[in-house]
Amino acid sequence: MIVAPRLEKRMPCCVFSSLVTDSGTLFVYYREMVQFFISAGGGALERLKSLLYAAAVIVSLNSTNAYGAHITLATEFSVSVKAEDYVLLVMAENQGDVPAHDVQLVVVVGDKMLVGPVVKKLKVNEQTVEEFSLANVFGIPGRYPVVIRTSYKDANGYRFTALTVGFYDYKSTVMPAVSISGHSISIPVDGKGRMSFVLRNDGQMERAVELELFLPDELSVSDEQSVIKIGPQQQQTLEYEVENYSALADSRYQVSLLGQYEDDGKRFSVAGSAVVHVADNVRSAAKAVWIWVLLGGLLPGVIVFLRFKKQWT
Image: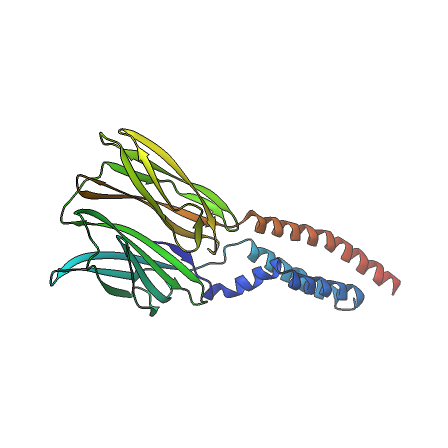
């Protein structure tokens, strides 16, 4: 599950924020200041106040969180048998406070990828249920992972991905001797960070564990798959460098490390999950401070200029 920011109701904030970061718009703003100095007249002070007020609004909006609502998709699944065929039912519910658009479920079970149809709009508290056939998916008995990737868009057409990892015991209930735990991190919106997982073997024999990191499309990692040999009663810390690819600031994404191994003719699967928080950059605050300093320097100069101009006239 992820919590992704929504833009539509607070769109004016985003527009104002772009005024601070868009150099072309900043040029227009400075041109207005120059025109003010050239054509200062009876209403000059009032115009200056208006410009300073507009700049103050821009700065304050740039330094606050512009997102007031969220899309939150929760998914769950169940497996049943119909006519000697295994069937996977996947339910996705919009638990946020705004609709989700172009919702699509993509499920990975074993070595098979199952793709569902696109749901044009999923309203608040509305559910969509998809049915997938699992014919010829399972092999030996044991625990199999079920990875659900839910993609959707907000009202502005921006795409997000939600990730859910679960398990299904096929013909045999097993208890893995290996466990995985993850540690959540925060990364800058234009940067990367190191995410760590702890792989632990509580059994009495060495295991060769196949590892695969599942993450949303908005994040990227250099090495997603590997095989780790871990001895009995040992643990290893695994690190992955996660980089933001297209996530918006203040989004939170689940990332899961999946581990699988075989023993005594059975399959064992475990997973550890953590959250990646894509945080606002410090640069935005720095820009806000810089603009305030600039305005603080301009204001005294303009006041002195107006006083001298009044004396000259």
